[in-house]
Length: 243
Image 1 (cartoon, rainbow, N blue to C red):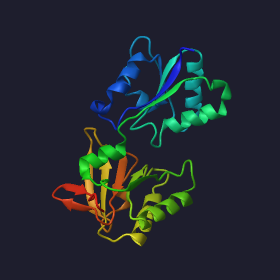
Image 2 (cartoon, rainbow, N blue to C red; image 1 turned 120 degrees about the horizontal axis):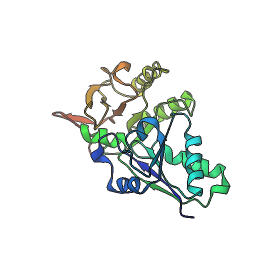
Image 3 (tube, rainbow, N blue to C red; image 1 turned 180 degrees about the horizontal axis):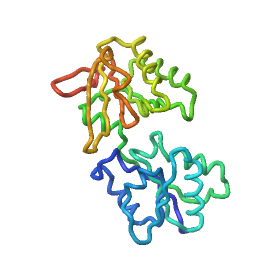
């Protein structure tokens, strides 16, 4: 077999944050598969076929990539950020598990800079000690599970990074997230809203939990919640390594 699937992270948005390893894989690809806006970030060229698809067909997309690779194609499945963080790497392996006839397809995962880390770097070092990442979307899990994990993380005094905080279809849920945080955290807890990080539209806003409102977040925002020791120093936010 000469085909293969490479699962690659395109970083948070800035082309300079695409790793050389990922750039090399894209140059060698015969096919690129991914969500429409992510595939649009790949430069077309002769010999490369782009396969954009909608956001909620991850397993179909992954299966298609594996099937093309089984026929000899060199397929790159693209995600934004890092493909292993709420992205396509898990979907490809889930599809592979469901299709034992494709088990011989070589699969490689290439890491990328996820939005959480890009946002933290832009803010300073709010994830400087123990932290967790929580996807607030309830598309693939019940919101009750989101609430439980959020409560436990807050009670354990983790710094937290929230992905997919507030969509048009569930605008009320981020208000509930703030309510849960206020049940476990002091009102001075520091929160950074990092929107469109690493793009020309990047905007960072740091407030206290008491000041935070649901309309500060949307689907292009990563929300970084400090732990009880997180503090500001000038324009920066950081969590001490001993916290």
